[in-house]
Image (cartoon, rainbow, N blue to C red; front, side, top):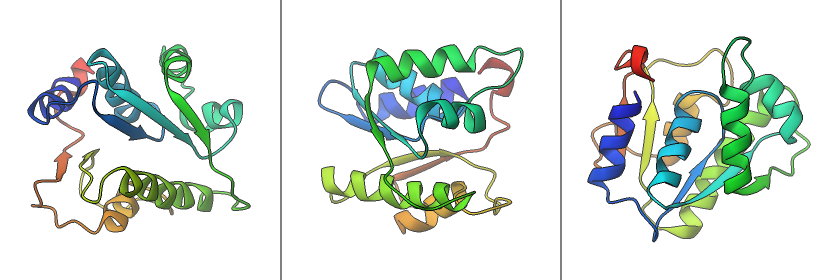
Length: 155
């Protein structure tokens, strides 16, 4: 997955003139942010919840380094917090809408990389929700879908 995300960032010439927006969850979000930072891009970390709570729900996984990686990205990124009264999983759907709005404010035709198996998630705010909010067809060149089975051993 890391290599696939890196290839797309390279194809799109992501660098100092680029702002990458992400939600900061473990996995593809943090990998993409780390790779963008290495390419000297600005990273806007849009947290659905206060950092400690977000980390508990979407980052921390015992026996991994995801929390340390999250903290390092957070240290280097422009961190923003969703101002929402939404609760439960609904807050993640609101965060998706917010991130799409942030991207559209920067570029009328933003590009997106998603790691997705093409299926509906088990609640609001998943990758399928984000893709739907973007309004892009799956073959749109502004959208790159990377299947999660690609390169999982080498993430």
